[in-house]
Picture 1 (cartoon, one colour):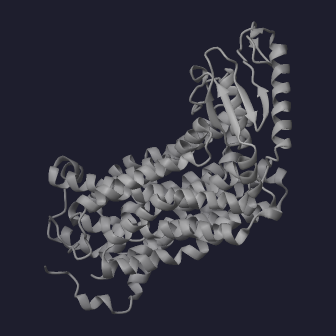
Picture 2 (cartoon, rainbow, N blue to C red):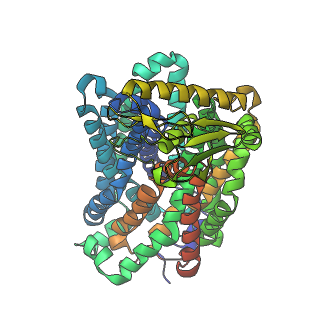
Length: 571
């Protein structure tokens, strides 16, 4: 096989032009991910600002769905910008993507909230999320393709792995900016207006990114292909209308990217969500621990990218998937043990059980905030989920009013139907008619009874800072980040090498963004719903484990190694 570059290039120093290419591509990707992580980290504040027209639980889920909306459209952005990248060039396409992304981010910082303009606020916010998702759909494929096509043979894993570090650095930067703002002002000021500052600061990153990208040249592989007249005039048709190419797209998605995506989001997003929402660790402390783990783990992106040039991309990615599947449950149980030992002790000594008629229990996932959960079972489960209390389910006979057992203490639930003849019960007997005032009183009595029982059983309302073993929590979080570096470090080089130059931008972008946008982007919302339904604080991990396991099997059986492929091929 003939290579465009001599294999001796693998040992020469990186040129100044190559460093500029990597820096420019990476800086843009830092900025792109900075915004997405910013929104994820501030989802609770954004829920209060833009979705205050619904109840707090629905508002939080609505905010998560708005976050996920950006991921939902990423594959469509991959199609739009991937096609442009294969037709007019890599450089100008990802100049456009960063402009769209940057301006959308800045506008969030000046967008009036629900209290100011009503329903228009969440509608505009979701519209901006959609624009950001479309732009990001064209960003990563452009950056990875651009860097890989500048890299010498034998160094593509190393060169493209620098892009992978920037997603983590984007999260790291967002956490630092948020922490800086929280430290500089009171919590009340931050929640009222200070949260806008990180979004407004992004305009500086945008200016720097655009300025540097304007100085770049087109990729040599694309220029050579264009000069020879071999560029694709219909990259979408070639990529997805011809089975020989579509087959590779499907293998890239189900044999590589889907598993990579869920490992990525579990290690970086879900870990933060688990610390703050489930274990009730103070947000600032949780962010600092995540930041420390990222700082320790980020160099492994380059380590595994470089190793992939020597032993191959596939063995490293598959090993990361396997380790995730085998160790996620013990790792997250370890995080509970070291971050909130009081919760672990309470679960062991006074387990919580919801006793209810299964037919009365709903799947409490309400993305649009319109459903009302009014049965005694739904009220019982909602109260526990809101407090972050794990529970198990026990079936009761039909017609029985639900109750919560905390150790040996039983707290009856109640029904809260919105009609005037609402049925209410504070016992295990038949429900009787009551007025709305009675229902409100029943709710207050239920909340007090549950609160008293949980307090007596030593369930902590939040993690005790004095009992958090910070070193061990950071160590476990670092292991999760290292899994991320294993599956993500080599992925860009492998995706680039799977497709010919003429349709590379389009073909690699779609599976990458379906995997990361859908399988990964919906992970926090999906896992949250699974935990709410089952009561098991670890049950949300089944989602990434099942996806990673399926990807592992498909990848081992059907995906071939690519490190020695000639990426200058046009066909």
